[in-house]
Length: 358
Image 1 (cartoon, one colour):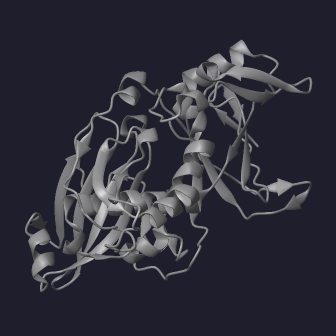
Image 2 (cartoon, one colour; image 1 turned 180 degrees about the vertical axis):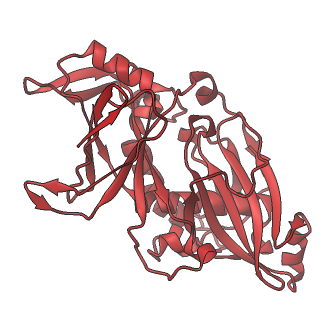
Image 3 (cartoon, rainbow, N blue to C red; image 1 turned 30 degrees about the vertical axis):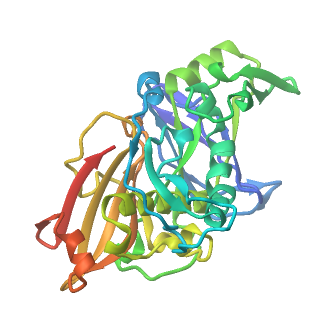
């Protein structure tokens, strides 16, 4: 699949196998911020998955803000925010602290005593550990993001050679592309029909274009291919978990009715009913620039006295990443505890907004 941009010619081929592995052919364009491509996926001459859309986000990734992290601890919860239990095993003295964004992605927001052992194992095993040790592992090593196991950092990446075999590339010289995803607006907001496990997603590859060019120059025998694993449904659960934990920290556990706990814990696969992204800045457009991760909370009123809590999320915002949102809960103005949450927000028509960056 070949695309021309001015006098520059480059290729991008997406190949999705049964294990959801995408092979991206370089060179990646360093002059364009977004290059949409649509094509059918084939393997061994047989079509496996329907048409997908791929694009490249070539963004300079400043090492300074990647490595700087500010820690903030909220008030302890004293129960599990996911399953609701208040009981602890006899050999456990307290609930686990919950990082809203994982420490491994520079997450400095901590919700103390907020997760039981069972839910912690589920979230780590099914969502965070797999994302952090697969899709994000090279990015984390290259840019020195925090880790509790520094000895386990990836030091080399094996790239395929044009002459066969592999080339060992030090992680600090690798371009470390990361798969992100673009979703439609969450269906609970758009009014679209709820379809479990919908395939309404596209892949965005985040990479520093200058790093990509240097990689090609240093290793001319490299065949120009990145192998990237695509897991959009796991990432949607990841966004739901971040949004829900942030809402609990900022609004309060008892100040809304949760909507995404089943998705987070793997008990529902209707991910895109509550999780989505927007092609433009979300309604909390007043959020500040700079920093690493941006968050905003808004309440969208769907009927008199009933509102949906929407958390806007932009990970590593300066790199031009997608604007995600998670509809994490429902508030009822007739409920005294819910009403206390509503008072934090200023009303703008049928929308209540509160912007923040942490």
